[in-house]
Length: 314
Ligand SMILES: Nc1ncnc2c1ncn2[C@@H]1O[C@H](COP(=O)(O)OP(=O)(O)OP(=O)(O)O)[C@@H](O)[C@H]1O
Ligand SMILES: [Mg+2]
Image (cartoon, rainbow, N blue to C red; front, side, top):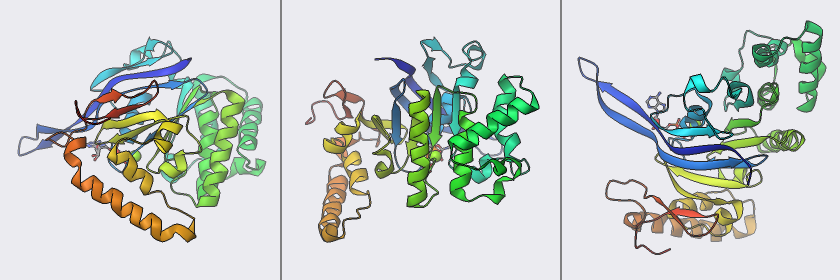
């Protein structure tokens, strides 16, 4: 197994300050001990509801958020701290696509400058070469050449998201962290952007960390998936493990929340959802400790781990 990045016991705790002296009185445990490996050319899905710590995990990996403890190994080198990243070309090799393209693309800059910016940080190209490169990138994401001199507000949400993809691949990265890249888009446009992402992946042998709150979206993109809840992983496994053999009640709940297009069985799905919800409420104590914390992961197969109480049923 060729791995591109390994995350070990990662924690990100935000201090909460309060009172007259603005002292640190508590911490938000946004990410509280997660371990995972992303393989070369593969997509790792990170799924969980709002506030579970997905974005914080992504930002900590790329260096936008301070790591409280744990480590990040990129191609076997420790890149947890900023000073080690330079030698590894980490800032060039690892890029991010954000959920909200309107605020992540500078509204005052033309597309040419937006997409060329990451290139300018790492390469010296003539204006001519740079323009050629940006045109090529626009072509890869199915955007016309005349987009070069337009501004972000002149595009639709789906087009802007594709510009975000073009910008992220500009430096020929090895890993892209895609934080809810299609959540703000219509279903048909979602499929389009995901297809571009898949094509680019095959062409360049890219790895993705694909963040989403929706197990439906992740299904066709991911090789491996981690289900996150309150800063911890409740279950990790291959796509097969998660969709056909879910073990944690929280995973089952997320699966039952996937919207079904199949109208004929709508009542059946509704009943199923109610059943899962009931099980979720009644069996909390089997799945979370007395403080509501997710248990440590236990191995149930070579590829599949679930956070269950010691001595609990597997
Ligand atoms: N800068 C910050 N200071 C304090 N708490 C923060 C900060 N950023 C995030 N948090 C908290 O950390 C937790 C995890 O936030 P995060 O943004 O990682 O969640 P998420 O899974 O990405 O959610 P969403 O699906 O809504 O994007 C939340 O409880 C959030 O309120
Ligand atoms: Mg988020």
